[in-house]
Length: 255
Image (cartoon, rainbow, N blue to C red; front, top):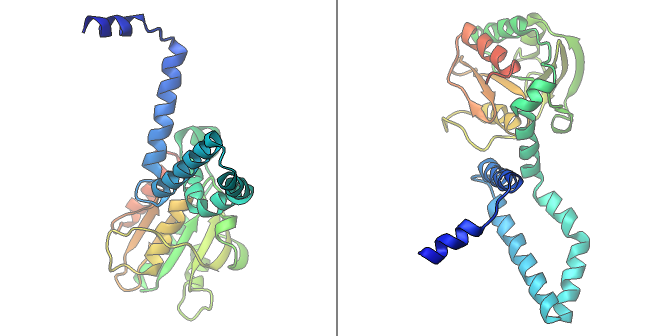
């Protein structure tokens, strides 16, 4: 015990060493937290095994194995980027939702009252709808393929888009600041829903918020409920004032 104590006592740690260790621990922790429940840990294990084999092959001078490894290196990086594309998007979305970026970037000016008014008009009439509000991150790469509108936000226009006989009603509308950019957008589906009976519209509402910092508002035509999705989480049905307050808190970086 005495010798162990002396060894520990003789070790020298500077403040920079402690900061270095804490930063490494924080990065590893955040990665594990972000990718929990995904295929990332299994793929990372595969990469570690491959690197271990490469090191052993280099030490033992295994020419055949070395040739295969060198050939794999040529396309390995591109393959990893393609395989990890959903995880990379998820990581970027998490960074985009961080409090630091919220401080250094301005919140978009959204006509919240008009959007909320449209939501409850649609709900009262028993229509279904999916409204996506662009926050600080661009949605361009995930929402290509819809019908361009580029019109000023108004309750009547939003309501008319989701009228069942309107050919644009099936899909989502994208709102950026005070403009409706597009309609009939197809969105990526989410990985989890609080109620398995909820449909594809709710899955899409969750899906876009798993990959970006966008806000989704989904209206059920069957239940006539209004819910909001953010950071991959779908809320319970909300009343009018609750929805307005929730959007304001998200845009101001308080949720």
